[in-house]
Amino acid sequence: MPLKLKPGDPFPDLTLPDESGTPRSLSSLADGQPLFVSFFRGPW
Image 1 (cartoon, one colour):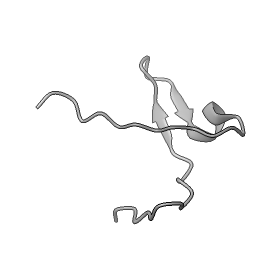
Image 2 (image 1 turned 180 degrees about the vertical axis):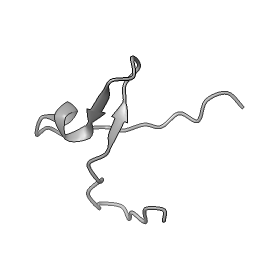
Image 3 (image 1 turned 90 degrees about the vertical axis):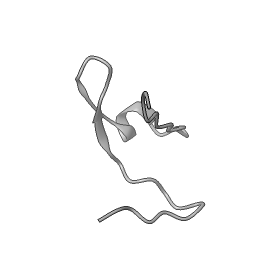
């Protein structure tokens, strides 16, 4: 089921692999500070 976020909703704490494949959670990267998340679709 896709997430249905509205502007201002908190983003869920996801764990995704970094560039070397190590799992990283958004909360550990943010360390209590604001975090900007950008997704890149890749080559068309």
